Amino acid sequence: METSKITIAVDGFAACGKSTLAKALAKELGYVYVDSGAMYRAVTLYFLDHHISIEDADAVEEALKNITIHFENVNGQNHTFLNGKNVEEAIRSMRVSNFVSPVATVSAVRRAMVELQQEMGAKGGIAMDGRDIGTVVFKAAELKLFLTASIEERTRRRLVEWEGKGITDISAKEVEKNLSTRDLIDSTRADSPLCQAEDAIEIDNSLLTPTEQLEFALQLSKDIIEKKATGLVTN
Ligand code: DC
Image (cartoon, rainbow, N blue to C red; front, side):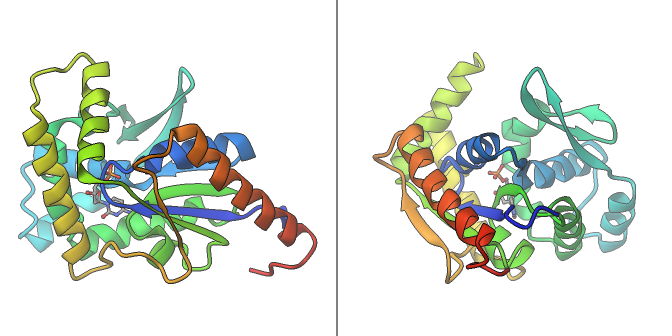
């Protein structure tokens, strides 16, 4: 392992721009990028398609044995594959978005995903975004960022995303309800709830452009990488 490579954990509420930032940081630094939310979304898609009830512990355990998730670069974009099939579009649907938070409360699901995430980041040189990356998955990450933004701004950004995909039949109200319901479930669940790690740096990006946010986070990363290279940061 290159000793100066660090682990970057990006956590925060739904639609705070975590993926945008983590992806851009990974690109700038030549690191691996992992969207951990996509993994919970892929599991959710499998459960929906196979009518797996999250109340049925045996069915959940069995289903998890039959799920493989990996990421591939498709035309320069990071795509999610479930059992060898590209599900990038399907996992972003409202059908999945409305069910993913309850699925992510299930401890067996979390255990399986966390194990996979830790394997992916075992060598360092990774930027991963999610809800429990700095608190559970990579507790020793050298850089932990916690993003926040107002619900109005997050709703606006998600709507723009949907519009960009040509989907215009989703109302602002529906998007806002999905985001706030997920935030509530994600931050109040018993197993690894979304919360800011004590050593995380909070960034409220409501009024920041993606470029301004990236410049700030990149400088933080470079400072830590330099300290690590000179032996000033040891983990
Ligand atoms: O990042 P996202 O909005 O695509 O994530 C979808 C859901 O997955 C989120 O509402 C909660 C869950 N999730 C989680 O519980 N832990 C993570 N590390 C990432 C996502």
